[in-house]
Image (cartoon, rainbow, N blue to C red; front, side, top):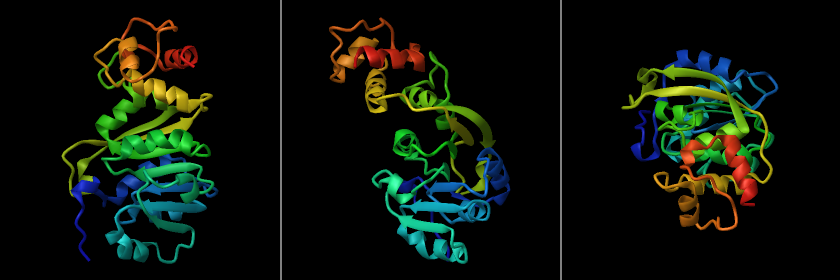
Length: 249
């Protein structure tokens, strides 16, 4: 059966299996791993994972892929396929005990999915995700650069990058109009009251052309009784944001 990728879902199916070795290496796959895969598509990565780890939980939004996915994973009892919107599901319930998130993430949800998983999946110790190159660059961008933003701060507060690999457009069907990359990162910890820290970071970058105090105030965060640096959000390091969150706590 011929399946058409749905542009509105950000689908670009992985079809070149040569890239799987790179993913396996950067994901540091082991036979006791429990892996969450979001957006399995045609199941190319799913079966690769299933042959190497203890359990795979695959979450797919597009139910029209069901027959092909079920056929592809047949005979692999360690794969559990669930249909639903990963941004709406409780991923902790959908993938109990998941220790790694390994996925070719749909382009239009990659950033929010990764951010939500930082505290939403506390048992995940390693991420290995294929995303747009521009998104991958944002994850570990340095302060005072164009790519640096809220997602950079939040990921760097929780993890350190362990691997990066540019990916050719030719490994996907349909061939995307943008470059991609695989980025891997390992959890180093989770700041106390991460929800509060996240709120401060996202408010700080909500109006990134404005000075920090103005952006926070416009987002409804009171700064009158706190000493807020007279800079823009992009000038603060992740550690600076932790200190700021404490001051505004």
